[in-house]
Amino acid sequence: MVETADSSVLAQLGWPDMRLPILYTMSWPERVNTSEETWPRLDFIKMGDLTFKEPDTKKYPSMDLAYAAGRSGGTMTGVLSAANEQ
Image (cartoon, helix red, strand yellow):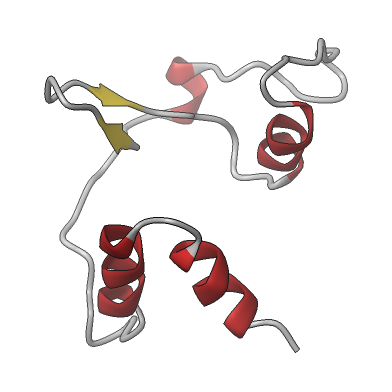
């Protein structure tokens, strides 16, 4: 989710499958038409409730580092992601 300057929030929602975010990244700024068989449409009734909780920084200690990288701007989030590669 992204909070904009006017405080509205934009969300890219979908089923928990990384294929669609990867397709979105590779085709940006365009959109690729997909079939219902390839990527079923998000059905909010079938999906159920959205639940939001405070991040658990004890369980995920790198969360603070990720927020700091985001605040730094530029390519720092990419640097952080690349630092995790083997």
